[in-house]
Length: 191
Image 1 (cartoon, rainbow, N blue to C red):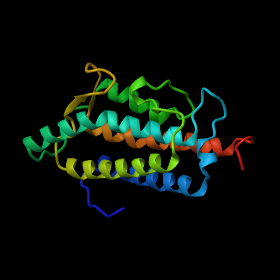
Image 2 (image 1 turned 135 degrees about the vertical axis):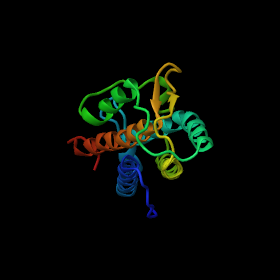
Image 3 (image 1 turned 180 degrees about the vertical axis):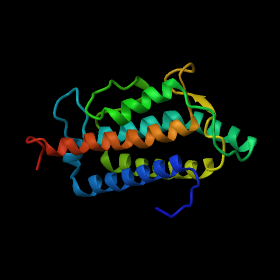
């Protein structure tokens, strides 16, 4: 990934997590076979490729709201901190994806992988394309009002700030890449 000089420390930290997630996903896709990427320990558990598709679905579901709030922030022009405080919903989601990696949380339907017979190649290519969009959005947001809020895809009543969206998704990616790595550690994982 290219070097950028973001000024907001939260955006810098989010960029680092997105870039780390990209490297880890690339390592998974290049070191595992299609069979390994699609293997599931049980019918109610996700495969490696389903973990990645879940991240794709989550990012795509947030995309319209994120783009709209970025446009609104650009229209308002540059803004220096302090920003309006994030929402309690955003703090709750962030604590779930960041602070409790071992806790299983049922994903809302809008974020579920669309199918179980996923082709790993296109799923990982889509992930990388989405990563580039996240990084472009981070660059576009730098210097703008990160406290602007928008509705989550789950409900128009559940809102997060722009800053929280970056934090949530960058931590969320690492959470599910950890999940994918744990699959590799299972004794029954195909060799």
